[in-house]
Amino acid sequence: MDVEALKSELTYKAVRSSGSGGQHVNKVASKVVLYFILEASSQFTDEEKARLAEFFQNRLNKQGILILDSSESRSQFRNKAIVTQKFLDLVIEGLKEEKERKLTKIPTVIKRKRLDTKRKTSEKKANRKPPKID
Image 1 (cartoon, helix red, strand yellow):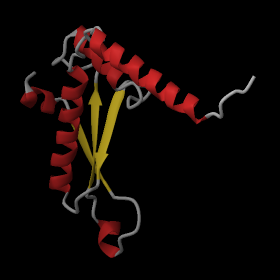
Image 2 (cartoon, rainbow, N blue to C red):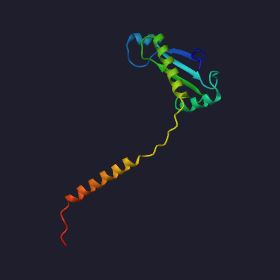
Image 3 (tube, helix red, strand yellow):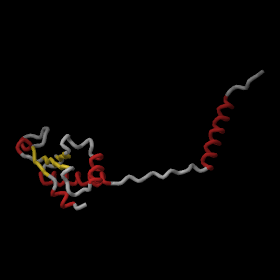
Image 4 (tube, helix red, strand yellow):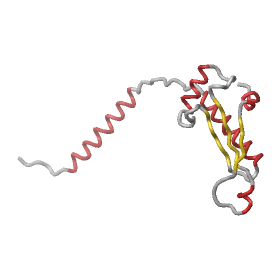
């Protein structure tokens, strides 16, 4: 995966941050919104696009555009770096192959130990009862 080529496919937009903050926040567009069109990307194979589409299924809008934003910092430049890193981390995580789980057999010693513990607990509880007189 070529990170620089992938970054060139991203679109950024600076907007005003929401919420309270006084005079400064009302006049400065420091929040950065990142747009990425998954289907139009030339950096991924069809298989990778399918895997990413499944990974991003709750994040993609109806047009297939991934939208991420960052308003953590007061600096537009810093927010752009944060949202880009967030995007790259998500792509790397989405492309990870899940390891196939290897089934393991429970050792006989462990089974025996569990049954012995159950038997001892049962005997302990049985000894608490008053004896039956016939």
